[in-house]
Amino acid sequence: MKLTRWLIAAITSLALPFSGAWAQGTYPDQPIKMMIGFAAGGPTDIGGRILAREMATALGQSVVVDNKPGASGVIALDVLTTSKPDGYTVLLMPNASTVALQAQNKAIDIDTRMSVVGGTIVQPMLVVVNPKVIDVKNLKELEAYLKANPGTPYTTSGHGSPSHLAMTVLAKRRGLNITHVPHKGIQPAMMDTVAGRIGLLLTDANQSRPHVVSGALRAIAAGGSVRSPMYPALETAAEQGVDDFEYDGINALAAPPGVPAPVMQRLRDALKKAVESEAHTRYAVDGGNKALYTDGSEFRSVLVKDFDRWARLKREAGDLK
Image 1: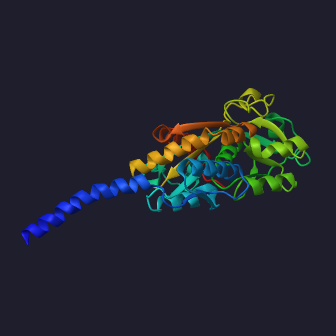
Image 2: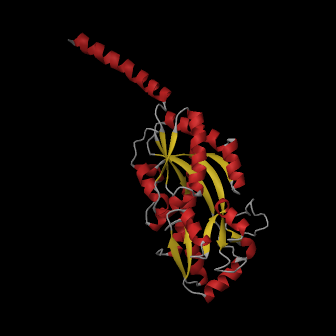
């Protein structure tokens, strides 16, 4: 009997590491779900589908996009946090989602929220208007218009988004009375602005380009730290004398907390290839953005610093409406 128990224990001890190596070696052996916390057709969705296709090639397995819009991506982030940490569920997440946690008065708790696979893109943001509704050409003229027309509505991709917070702080610092009209993603917000139901929008260069080219919209400032490559003549807010209005969009791929290191490495290797692929690089450049792979450990620090910066702005903004 003792000999039998010893043999079973010995066989089990040998089988466990073999089983673990086998499991790691075969990952992924089923499709991977890439969640996107915004509506189909928006910049995060379009870029995500390119990354999904390129990652599928690198991994030898399908990567299926699953849109879960709402709360500036926080709904999808909550799903990610409670998903099984096996590497088969990931989330393409702009910093709009972590910033939106501010609106819900939540801490980022990054290591209990997610495992950061890596950064993917930097997106300069733009302030655009429908000139038929708000006929201004720069931020100074916009400020004068808003002071003369209290309650003017503006729209963003969602409540608690970086655009919402940035506009709230800008309004508070300058004594402006503006009304936020949130949408579930930038695409429906864009359509409302193009249609003239709302005159003011904060968006990325890629989504606004066809409407700016057609004249339906007018870009009046770059909200990021540098000029948009797509609009090199468009001055930044700082260059227009508004030096307290600066933000860029940054995207990351995240997995649930607790994903095993070998699986995370497979995801990081695939993501790096996808970000640096010709298709994704072309998408980024055509959109006036920069494709930039940043390793997960480094990008974790970027997200924390970004969250802390927006936390300071949130404290200044007070209750978001």
